[in-house]
Image (cartoon, rainbow, N blue to C red):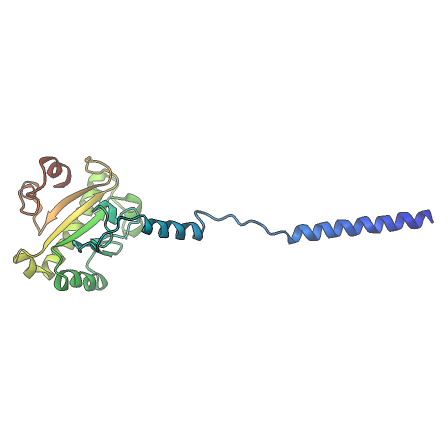
Length: 223
């Protein structure tokens, strides 16, 4: 009789152990996710829209052809950019067929007065999109970037020369200096080409920059 009681107790304890293991296996495991969950992002979007300054739709001011470096945003080129520009972006900020369709709309149909072309001085990004190794020295990298900007300005001038000659369009080539290659501050927007003009002195006296202050010309004009 005693042995029977012991056997029943043993079987009961084994059953409890199996049941406990089964319950543990069925417990939901919390998944670790990188970054904010989607509902938090959606909440920020909705609340950000509600917190904006209520106003009429801002007029379009310019068309912006830029590289697709994620560190370059419209906020770097204008305050409160929503509704103020047409963005056209591709890896090297060049006049691809897709880019031309949007820029044609901005220049020929909407008659926007400025086409801003921007490349960014970001070594990591440049190394990812470049087919050749980047120059090791900063001077070489600056030259590479400046030539790319000048090339895009030249192509845009050839396509929109009528509006440029009539004074209806200004094409600005610039560098968003994220890495402070030019020594004028991290993230400074540097205008290096206006309608094909590259000379720093003439850029200072250009009709498109005439209303800038002396400090603004010093900090933002020339390569």
